[in-house]
Length: 82
Image (cartoon, rainbow, N blue to C red; front, side, top):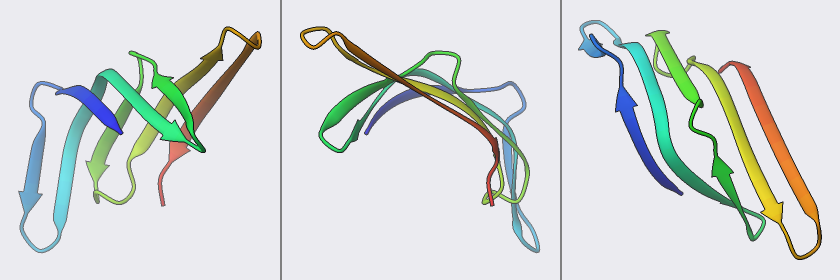
């Protein structure tokens, strides 16, 4: 996986009683290999944190484009992590 991202203004990590993360990670550029296929993660993909780091809200779109075979696969993932 290759990833270039950015953090929102005020992004912070707290480590008091339990770790907590607040803010948004935005993807600028990314590529993920899945089952031998290279998916380009779209620029508007983001992960929002509002507390425990293991339960972020994810909004991600990745595209695999095989021009030779005329196949385009789009994967859209949205929801709260658990």
